[in-house]
Amino acid sequence: MKKRISLFSSAVMAIQLLLASTWGYAAEFQEIKQSYQNLTVNAKLMMADDKTFANPMVLLTHGTLTHNERSTYQQLQKNLANQGISSLAINLSLGLNDRKGEYDCASPHTHKHTDALKEIDFWLKWLTSKGTTKVTLMGHSRGGNQTAWYAAEQDSDLIKNIVLIAPATGEQQSASDYERKYGKPLAKVLAKAKALIAKNQGDAMLKETDFIYCKKAQVTASAFVDYYESKPQFDTPTLLEKISKPTLVIMGTNDTVVADLPEKIQPLAEADKIQTLMLEDADHFFLDFANEDIASATAEFMSGTD
Image 1: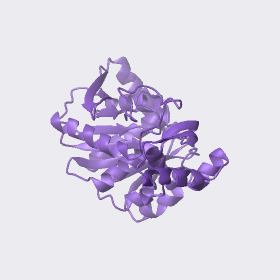
Image 2: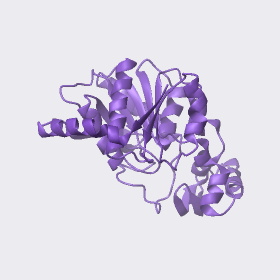
Image 3: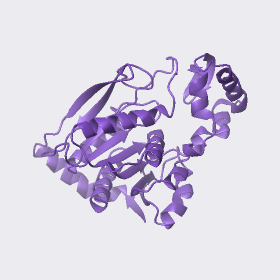
């Protein structure tokens, strides 16, 4: 099932949300800190008015090297709360203690793409300990891929449905994308990193190495290989073939980051394997009306798949 929504059609809902705010909507962010693998990890909890952990909860995972206080995610948590939905937006540690803000490219990179799956699992267990029994897994961009990867491999009765916002495709990890960004082939760097791992030196630092969004970074051989060795799971549409839970994929017509996503995902939508929503004029970050549209679509999707 495929829908298209113009951002102009959100005007009525925007007025309703403004009125809700004017009438004294009281939801506030609460920072949650926990110990995880000798690190402190943190998340932002927003409970909707009159809701408890026993009500359905959204677990939100952010995109590449960013954080849960970015405008996209703060707006989304507030907009979800105005729809009566509580949420927990996690901050992936990326190997750092009590990490806050954007990841500093000058910091050595020891984190792995697949580390996120373990941290999603950790926070799901935390929600379970609080009495949550129904979770909607939500992820944006790379976080959308990591969310889908987790759902494909670690399905449980706790996960009721999945919402992926512009999830990454395999192109973001490809050799062609690396060469386009950095003007050099990926193969030589990848071979060097693999050679170190073969000698049990996976923790060795590759100096002055272009990595993800960071030029001339320091990155361990193991981290580099984990992000760049070709894997079918990096392609979210491939993962969706294996996911049994109801899934909604949200895209924007002006999104140039995952421009190949709509075409790659179309066969799944036509086969009714997933639901899709295309937001007119929305770019990769889904701010303002687009963000409100995501929240309202999520609320409708959750109620229809409960």
